[in-house]
Length: 339
Image (cartoon, rainbow, N blue to C red):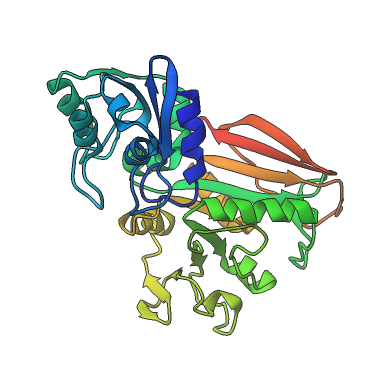
């Protein structure tokens, strides 16, 4: 199962809104096939693992380790549970049940009805973390929310004039592009858009997937139409109080002031966007923190000081789960323990 989980991670950024899945086939104590879900709409992990087996006759009576319950319904591909039944595998080990109502428990039941032995809960915690976006989307009816910012060692994210270039080093900024390639969408507030004129695309990291959806929270439509965010090069959603419409890969959606943030997340859920990387600014990030609507925070801390300026957000219900160094920068990873 460790190997299956390792394989599953190879699909990060390429399979959403499907979950990441890895599969390993074992016969007589030896791995004879392995695969992972590589691309949304493409073959599932089980099919890729089966197709990798040189001698197909060996699959009968084999053990299959798969990180998520094999599907039981027809989507873009046939049911994987039917495939395993047809091939006559002996035992299927599963990390997590598929929380999607179309599948939940049905794949397990179908295989057991066909006299296949099934064990569930192998490396369950690791499997849950692997598909934290997928599980959050279905259990909380909203995207998985990652907060990201860079701050000086004296805890400022920008100077008084909103200038924040450059707090983190160039290698830290490259890591951010890697993160962008792993998520469905990137969100910024109006002030960040106005002062930084960001592109919010993936430039400094190899990416085979589509560019993430850009989300602009601009209640009063202050961001000029000639900014990079509105160049039409990737899908962009502008949440605001005044206008709805579609034009040139852009969508404006008018929402009520009351429950504005919650309604944004509800709309993203309807659009099947499973994850959001919120890149600023301070006001927007604090809005999500104050409503306890966040799952993870990634904070770059540099050795520079501003002395005064715009204060970095304060996290509540946060547990430090990891930290890394990128030369002089430090990245702190937090998890919301009360979300």
